[in-house]
Image (cartoon, rainbow, N blue to C red; front, side, top):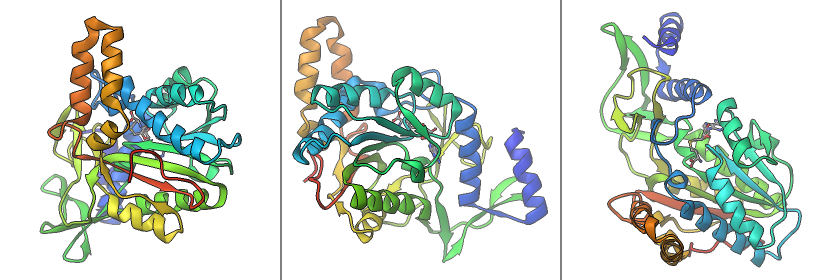
Length: 325
Ligand code: SAH
């Protein structure tokens, strides 16, 4: 039994069943604090770890918004849950080439990942919470951040909980599941209020759906495979699909501009990833096969191209980043 499972069982014995939201929060807090989960040797691989092209396209998109907003010198590059810092390093190369000289702020709770981020982007400033970010225009990026934030599940209007039954962790009810995530909506609203007050634009990229719909999307991943969600708490990555409609509504209600949701493949192609792949292949002919494989993985509908979605939230005074209608 994992140390966290023992603690959760004791808590359930003392206080009764815990919500899926509490369970997910406890699991991910432990999980991210105790390892670097990314890459072939870890549990999962994200888009920026597949190819530099991903971060470069993100950099091009935010550089475009920054330039069209008049290139404000006070703007900062901000990332939520920057992982190993790979996306930031690739995006910042493009932003710096476009003349951006602003600072870098990271919101990250894991000490281990902060160390990795420091190696990739030595001059960043770290924050525990979004509320701690400095009040200045932001070019904000969050890739696979929202999926790790806790969700609630409801069955027939009753919140689903985790209990102990037949000697193991179990859900207290089954049936048609409706998921909500007040925490994700609050992140979107908080960012929207910041953009409204100080200017800027934010890109959220994640797996999920453009329209709210019922369904159980809670999933656990370990060593690049799906696993039962209640198994080995704290030792596997627990996420769910992001409801982009809900994120958009939360940001719009807070007064920010919100773009339509795009699928990742279309978005990257509109930003020019295919010509970037061609020039990388020409410069390194012996790596052309790898570049082509990465391009397919990021853009093909049967890989990450369709399941992954993108939405931008922006100050009403700022343009939406390129690639989103
Ligand atoms: N964006 C990176 C990493 C994605 S993994 C990439 O694309 O590779 C999720 C990231 O979010 C990790 O850096 C993790 O430590 C961070 N994270 C998870 N929950 C968080 C929270 N509540 N507050 C801040 N960071 C969090």
